[in-house]
View 1: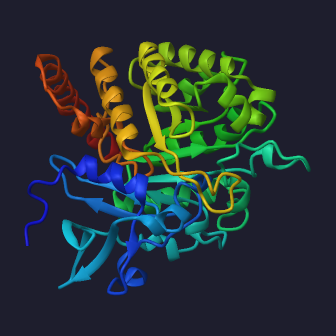
View 2 (view 1 turned 90 degrees about the horizontal axis):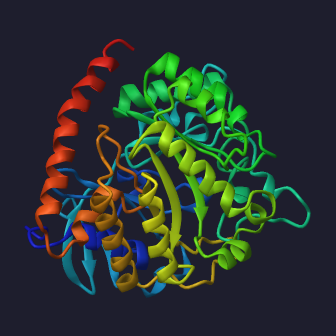
View 3 (view 1 turned 60 degrees about the horizontal axis):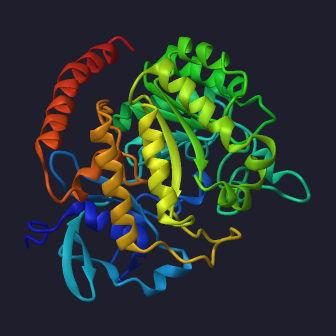
Length: 403
């Protein structure tokens, strides 16, 4: 069966993000797939799948549990040993399911189950190292309205992770799964977020040599980022979520009250200059605020040399927005087309590091699937990215040989 020939893998990925997928009784996810885990603010609550694509396959986390999925036209079936995405009975694509990492069932020397320390999201290791976000702690909670971190940390994963447990989990993921990138994100800890992340970052860089990303609320003491860069952090991301100030205030009350949007913008601009083009990202959610504001956010992020990490809004179960509608596919196509056009316009390098496929978002590199008319600028951009990969990836592999 050759169902993948004419299928645009990026468009399929986006439609699955917007509509989710049902699971047919023929599927055996318990044995064939990674376990569905509620981590990473709820975005990891779906099924990890691999959509075949060239030159790199697409990893994505398909919504399964959310209320809007009941209306999805997509169903996953297993037939003759293959997993097939069907749409209203028609075969759309033969996909693969990434297997459960062996280290998930292993324990650290401290006796902690590794799956409660770090989670594979696509091909990278995601770690929420410390206590639950401070916005979840007051009796009158001020957490972001779409977030489920407070429902997960301490329940489906350890409330606080020992540095040694994190290092051992990362080493296992590197050896068994070929992981190249470890991503740390924290909640709000009264301005001490970078201090909390520092010992984890230092240990991972010293003991594994892996690439490290950090996502924390912005630090108003900008000089602290110089120290983070000296530690060897490779990537920073800033989740300001929504560009429209009124929507930011309404849906991110804690961030509005304690940080403000300006703090995110200031930190992103400072670090983008410090790290250089394409090393910092601004993370936003598409599907809550008006699409015009999302497009403005994309233009702003790329104008300062950062790249947009765009989450398709997922009304996760248990959150205050679980009944909010999932975004319209047609609107999201416009968003991701603008994303890629803005990356080309500002000549921002993306996808240079090896083996980093993020399953929770449509990756910047996957924006190429939304470009309808490819001009000279598009091809010059692709050529430049290819050259950068040719230079950087062998250097990284060489470095890994000494760890």
